[in-house]
Length: 460
Image 1 (cartoon, rainbow, N blue to C red):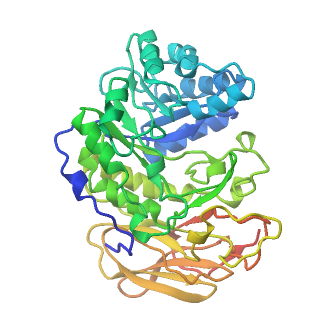
Image 2: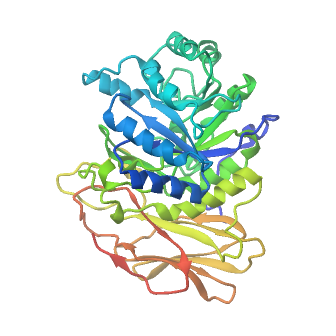
Image 3: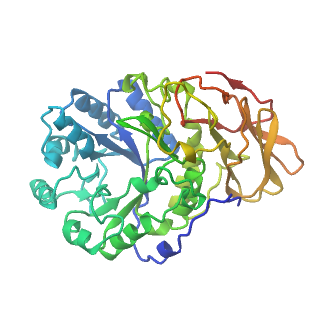
């Protein structure tokens, strides 16, 4: 296995023993305006990937599109085996409240939605047999607010919130558990999915070190844990302009999660469709998008769907306890990804995102080979120059060679005879300038396809 230089230690987590496994993988789904056909396609695509369901991120529950989109999703999911559950975005709800909306009561504002859908066939039930509910942040509400809310639902719920905005959370402090322990059935961490802004250390790429104390604390208190998996975070929206390194964050974190899969109850992929945060794996529909967010709209310029085969392989390995592998009979699966401007770019009138300096001019890739493969190599080429050739082995392989130049990028898989058997190319060209007048750190993601060919690209 080619691990590059981005490994992290998981020994402390491996000491955790004896947890009952639920083994489900979800994707965070931003509930917004969406056409009915697109909502149905999202479910179809997610089923094809192997996901068990969507965590439905709902900000202001009083918005008219919420009821319409939920109706589309639940109606179509019923009978398919695909599940849905509510994730209360209490941070966004607080913003809506400040803007004069009527949603100012925190979790109880979502009760009408929960009462409408919690008995639906498509609603996901937690390990206790009750409707699963999550959050994005605590919204600044107290434990007594959540205790009262639980009582209003007769405690018929499985509550696994993202409370990593609360003091003492990532330390799993005893005071945290004294305050919040009676509220939660499990925990979900969001910010640990990526290195911190400005952290360019390769040892923190894909690391699960921030999760480890929380997992240990959850186990000690007989609570479950849902770990996050995400490629990167780049946004020039939601009131922020930042980049959190993503070159190898996805495959390294996959490896680290699989190394302790027996100790994890759930995985949540961040995200299915959050275009403005750049960590989408599915479609970003035009009716759901702000056209001013040009680094993901139109999505045809920056599709991320070629990450999906890697996710499928990861899900299969997570659930089986085995290694990542391509579908039976396939030579390999994989993709390459890269940003389309160079680190020395100057974008007149634009502001570099916080964390810009941790970016690299690299061509990142991940390739999964079947058992029995031998003598195979991956070759990365930038603007006609070979920047890396490495041997690859059965299972998950990855790398991120630097030296990317303006022009076309290409990844090739060579067999033991040196013949090119699969190729990834024809993404957007890397520019020597700044074609979008934006320090765009979003990735081009291009999947491997059978056969050889010449490097090519399309200019923005």
